[in-house]
Length: 631
Image (tube, rainbow, N blue to C red; front, top):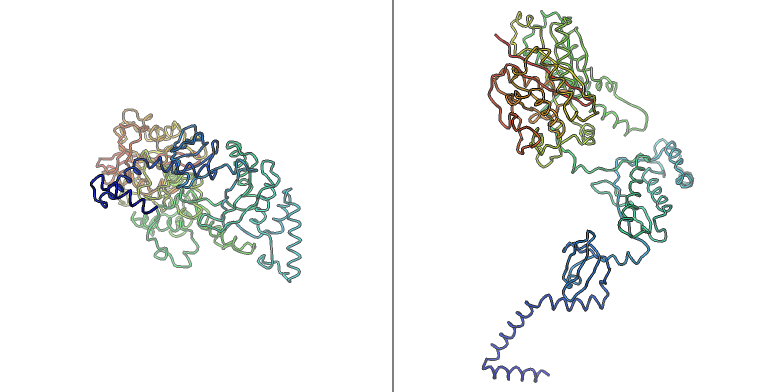
């Protein structure tokens, strides 16, 4: 055969007057060109034989091939192509040879089998797994499908512990004991076994998989009798909705990935309590109270108040905080949880968490015996404190009141609580630009912490002692939205009312106002509603106002926000400069373009009257009006 082949090769070479090697080269090149041109046809031909001979794919098979975007029923198999009608009725054409060269999924086995597989996990928070007490077991025995299992397992566990001498029940780590996760897994098994839509003849189990950074995966592995896609999805959804709802009954918690939640905050940097308190004293005060003491002390010293000469029964302290000692509360409860069930709390637990303790500590430190209390109106708390101080002085109850607010809610419970409300920005990739009031891409506020203190004094009293007067409080307004627990009124009804009352209390015409430091938290609903209210109340004068939000720089200090933003307003009068609203990049078409939002850079301006707006969950609204003092 080889001789004949060589003979043909030599004959053709002689006839074409071409050297044998050159002829071979030409023949090889021609073959390559033919293969290149007819690649799909040749590969398709070979593949179609393999597909047919090996029964890889048939007409009406449901196939999924991500590479070509195919996910549907095979409607045609040709020499070079296979047509697939996708679930959305689009047509995808894939090369026939891809069925032998690339991976794909054929659902025929499921269609011909006894069910469609359900394989999905519920991720359980590891810290919620615990041993079950006698009370827990009795309570869970009331779940009918678990009653027999729990009784039988209890007896098995008791017999085992008796056999091996585990008699000490003080700690449940002694011997064997049932866990809430183990009983929950058994509940899942029994629930699935009794479910009419699940094929009990096929594999059915609840798997405890290896823990991950997302918690403990509890995998449901079963087969749905109905293989039709829509009905299968309904059955799967019903099962998981039921099981997810059951998790809390077993004192378990579902792990929530924080990749979509906030991981940052506006923390008070480089704060060292030992620079202000000794170790013994520090342990007595939650951080919110520490901040209050430090800040109030600085304000009193700066005011030049002579503590030896002032009538201390005419000096009060009115202080605001929205949450108080939330970090202390969190730590004490966690310590209790780690214990053996016997309540052992710090003797300072209650004094550290109560919101009025800050006002009390300030008065104790300086001996002020005038009005002394705390205001709580969520994020409007310290603004309410300033308004109360203003009114107490006006009514003649005090000559001087130290007022303001503090907050220290940056803790696991604080962050997690606001995350659960979807109130916080999730701009984890760029936290420094996350607080972006009025920007179209704003997605929530950034939690801040700290304190602000103001020494508010009757005007003639301050002049008499030669105090430096930064500005005057000349008006205040209070109102309620009476609308929703956490959301603002979309039309800004309460906001219009509070600003109107504030101006009326000072007998100030709308045209005389120079600037407004807005509540401006960087939430989609809140910012829009507040600006809408400003436009509606101020009309054509709105475009003449310098409107800003200092929360773009400080974050949201919750109950302390009103105090530090009042100080920002006072300094804008003092310095003749309105602070900017930073991080603004994308225009929001729902916000009037005529408004001067003091974007990204501060603006020089002679500020005679400035208003500070502060609002809180529960619909609390406060506006305070500050005036430049005439020398």
